[in-house]
Image (cartoon, rainbow, N blue to C red; front, side, top):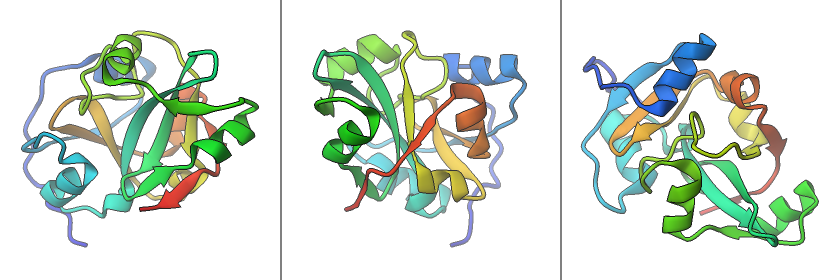
Length: 167
Protein backbone atom coordinates (compact mmCIF):
# COMPACT_ATOMS: atom_id res chain seq x y z
CA UNK A 1 0.00 0.00 0.00
CA UNK A 2 1.41 3.37 -1.00
CA UNK A 3 1.80 5.93 1.77
CA UNK A 4 0.22 9.37 1.34
CA UNK A 5 2.38 10.94 4.01
CA UNK A 6 3.89 13.76 1.96
CA UNK A 7 1.88 16.63 3.46
CA UNK A 8 3.98 17.94 6.34
CA UNK A 9 1.65 20.04 8.43
CA UNK A 10 2.78 20.96 11.94
CA UNK A 11 0.26 20.34 14.68
CA UNK A 12 0.45 22.08 18.05
CA UNK A 13 1.88 20.04 20.90
CA UNK A 14 -0.15 17.61 22.95
CA UNK A 15 0.77 15.92 26.26
CA UNK A 16 1.78 12.91 24.12
CA UNK A 17 4.23 14.82 21.90
CA UNK A 18 5.61 16.72 24.90
CA UNK A 19 6.22 13.36 26.63
CA UNK A 20 8.05 11.95 23.59
CA UNK A 21 10.16 15.09 23.08
CA UNK A 22 11.15 15.20 26.75
CA UNK A 23 12.27 11.54 26.55
CA UNK A 24 14.16 12.18 23.29
CA UNK A 25 12.08 9.94 20.99
CA UNK A 26 11.49 10.98 17.40
CA UNK A 27 8.15 10.75 15.63
CA UNK A 28 6.51 11.96 12.44
CA UNK A 29 3.22 13.91 12.45
CA UNK A 30 0.22 12.80 10.40
CA UNK A 31 -2.90 14.98 10.71
CA UNK A 32 -5.99 13.76 8.86
CA UNK A 33 -9.69 14.61 8.56
CA UNK A 34 -11.26 13.03 11.64
CA UNK A 35 -14.64 11.31 11.24
CA UNK A 36 -16.82 10.57 14.29
CA UNK A 37 -16.81 6.77 14.91
CA UNK A 38 -14.57 6.29 11.86
CA UNK A 39 -11.78 4.63 13.84
CA UNK A 40 -8.68 3.14 12.29
CA UNK A 41 -10.46 2.38 8.99
CA UNK A 42 -10.71 6.14 8.35
CA UNK A 43 -7.25 7.09 9.61
CA UNK A 44 -5.52 4.31 7.64
CA UNK A 45 -7.45 5.29 4.48
CA UNK A 46 -6.66 8.99 4.97
CA UNK A 47 -2.94 8.31 5.53
CA UNK A 48 -2.73 5.60 2.88
CA UNK A 49 -1.25 3.03 5.26
CA UNK A 50 -2.28 -0.53 6.11
CA UNK A 51 -4.86 -0.59 8.93
CA UNK A 52 -2.80 -3.34 10.59
CA UNK A 53 -0.07 -0.71 11.20
CA UNK A 54 -2.49 1.79 12.75
CA UNK A 55 -2.59 1.06 16.47
CA UNK A 56 -5.63 1.57 18.69
CA UNK A 57 -5.11 2.83 22.25
CA UNK A 58 -7.81 1.26 24.43
CA UNK A 59 -8.39 2.13 28.08
CA UNK A 60 -9.78 -0.88 29.94
CA UNK A 61 -10.24 -1.88 33.56
CA UNK A 62 -9.88 -5.03 35.60
CA UNK A 63 -12.30 -6.56 38.09
CA UNK A 64 -11.22 -4.05 40.77
CA UNK A 65 -11.82 -1.11 38.35
CA UNK A 66 -8.04 -0.49 38.06
CA UNK A 67 -7.33 1.02 34.62
CA UNK A 68 -4.89 -0.35 32.05
CA UNK A 69 -4.00 0.49 28.46
CA UNK A 70 -4.12 -2.04 25.62
CA UNK A 71 -2.47 -1.34 22.26
CA UNK A 72 -3.99 -3.31 19.40
CA UNK A 73 -3.77 -3.49 15.60
CA UNK A 74 -6.48 -1.36 13.98
CA UNK A 75 -7.92 -4.37 12.16
CA UNK A 76 -8.13 -6.61 15.26
CA UNK A 77 -10.19 -6.83 18.43
CA UNK A 78 -8.95 -7.57 21.96
CA UNK A 79 -9.75 -10.92 23.55
CA UNK A 80 -10.39 -9.66 27.07
CA UNK A 81 -10.40 -13.29 28.32
CA UNK A 82 -6.90 -13.94 26.94
CA UNK A 83 -5.68 -10.56 28.20
CA UNK A 84 -7.01 -11.21 31.71
CA UNK A 85 -5.44 -14.68 31.76
CA UNK A 86 -2.04 -13.40 30.60
CA UNK A 87 -1.98 -10.48 33.03
CA UNK A 88 -3.13 -12.41 36.11
CA UNK A 89 -6.49 -10.66 36.38
CA UNK A 90 -9.93 -12.21 36.88
CA UNK A 91 -11.56 -10.11 34.18
CA UNK A 92 -10.96 -7.12 31.92
CA UNK A 93 -13.52 -4.94 30.20
CA UNK A 94 -13.46 -1.64 28.30
CA UNK A 95 -13.95 1.46 30.44
CA UNK A 96 -16.99 3.63 29.79
CA UNK A 97 -15.93 6.59 27.59
CA UNK A 98 -16.19 9.16 30.42
CA UNK A 99 -14.13 6.91 32.75
CA UNK A 100 -11.48 6.31 30.06
CA UNK A 101 -11.28 10.06 29.49
CA UNK A 102 -10.82 10.69 33.23
CA UNK A 103 -7.94 8.18 33.40
CA UNK A 104 -6.16 9.21 30.19
CA UNK A 105 -6.92 12.93 30.03
CA UNK A 106 -7.75 12.49 26.33
CA UNK A 107 -11.02 12.59 24.40
CA UNK A 108 -12.23 9.27 22.99
CA UNK A 109 -10.92 9.12 19.41
CA UNK A 110 -7.85 11.08 20.49
CA UNK A 111 -6.40 8.79 23.16
CA UNK A 112 -2.64 8.32 23.12
CA UNK A 113 -0.71 5.92 25.39
CA UNK A 114 1.88 8.69 25.87
CA UNK A 115 1.45 11.47 28.41
CA UNK A 116 -1.65 10.07 30.10
CA UNK A 117 -3.05 11.86 33.13
CA UNK A 118 -2.90 8.72 35.26
CA UNK A 119 0.01 6.28 35.14
CA UNK A 120 -1.39 2.95 33.93
CA UNK A 121 0.18 -0.38 32.97
CA UNK A 122 0.45 -0.73 29.18
CA UNK A 123 0.01 -4.01 27.30
CA UNK A 124 0.84 -4.32 23.60
CA UNK A 125 -0.16 -7.07 21.18
CA UNK A 126 3.19 -8.79 20.63
CA UNK A 127 3.01 -8.78 16.81
CA UNK A 128 2.89 -4.94 16.83
CA UNK A 129 6.49 -4.94 18.04
CA UNK A 130 7.58 -6.71 14.82
CA UNK A 131 6.21 -4.05 12.46
CA UNK A 132 8.77 -1.70 10.85
CA UNK A 133 6.75 1.43 11.76
CA UNK A 134 3.44 2.08 13.47
CA UNK A 135 0.93 4.94 13.48
CA UNK A 136 -0.65 5.70 16.84
CA UNK A 137 -2.74 8.53 18.21
CA UNK A 138 -0.74 11.63 19.06
CA UNK A 139 -3.19 12.94 21.63
CA UNK A 140 -5.85 14.60 19.51
CA UNK A 141 -8.66 13.49 17.19
CA UNK A 142 -7.42 13.49 13.60
CA UNK A 143 -3.74 13.30 14.55
CA UNK A 144 -1.55 10.21 14.37
CA UNK A 145 2.17 10.02 14.93
CA UNK A 146 4.50 7.59 13.21
CA UNK A 147 6.99 5.85 15.51
CA UNK A 148 9.24 2.83 15.75
CA UNK A 149 7.31 0.18 17.74
CA UNK A 150 10.32 -0.20 20.07
CA UNK A 151 9.33 3.16 21.61
CA UNK A 152 6.32 1.41 23.20
CA UNK A 153 8.57 -0.77 25.32
CA UNK A 154 11.33 1.83 25.80
CA UNK A 155 9.08 4.76 26.80
CA UNK A 156 6.09 2.98 28.36
CA UNK A 157 7.55 -0.33 29.57
CA UNK A 158 4.73 -1.93 27.58
CA UNK A 159 4.40 -5.66 28.21
CA UNK A 160 3.86 -7.92 25.20
CA UNK A 161 0.70 -10.06 25.23
CA UNK A 162 -1.15 -12.30 22.77
CA UNK A 163 -4.79 -11.22 22.77
CA UNK A 164 -5.62 -10.26 19.16
CA UNK A 165 -8.80 -11.48 17.48
CA UNK A 166 -9.27 -10.95 13.75
CA UNK A 167 -12.19 -8.58 13.09
